[in-house]
Amino acid sequence: MTGPAVSTDLAPAPGHENAAARAPIGVFDSGIGGLSILRALRHELPHEDFVYFADAGHAPYGERGEDFVLERAERITQDLLERLGIKLLVVACNTATAAAIQSLRTRWPLLVIVGVEPALKPAAASSRTHRVGVLATRGTLASEKFAQLQASLAGQADFVLQPCDGLAAAIETGDTAQTAALCERYVRALGPLGTHAGEIDTLVLGCTHYAFALHDFARLAGPSVRILETGEPVARHTRRLLEAAGLLQPQVRPGRLALQTSGDPQALQDAVHHWVA
Image (cartoon, rainbow, N blue to C red; front, top):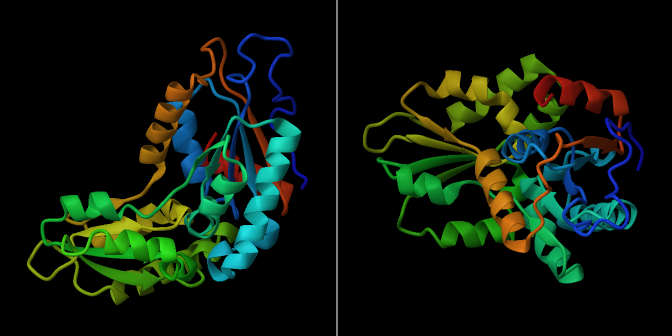
């Protein structure tokens, strides 16, 4: 796994009494989608060091099989632990969370691992029409973890599920015309949106890539439809876990960021500059 590093040395200071707290946080996704989570994490935790791995050479995960995604997630986690000694891992990908997070927690029980999942619970709680549209990859929607989440909310809302084939890839490559066209196709496929009975009044973005198409979704849905993503809730949850474990970085300097990718390093640098920096 290769890639440029904004900061190449993220190792904690040797011999420091709180060296574990000074270790970096690992974040990975199949590509740039997880940068929407990283952006929220860095805003919530500005003194923490992060290493972000984009598995762009094997993207998109949402159109791969679960066994493939699990193998990649395990390999990336092992590498981040062995080389950088990460203190916490954020699986910043809905598909990878669904396919791999239970296995990762079993294999590395001492590592704090945070996953992401579509925001069905807050959507069901806030929807006034009790009709929620869910835009996600086919892999996420077909997963057992998603089925369990949806089943746990039975009777609270009607969920209209829309797989968005090709959308994550279009966002990944920066094809704005294709992104806009696919957003329109999939939003229209959901059916009527609005605040009247039988209309969808809440949209859930069930892929971290989709946060970077928020403007397109908002334009298509209109001002009366609420759109939910996962970056800020994940960041707040990560802070709580670090505090509980006594692993917060001392607030003595701004946090550093290292970038790694199995794809094009310059493309990742450009995406970070555009979306995060």
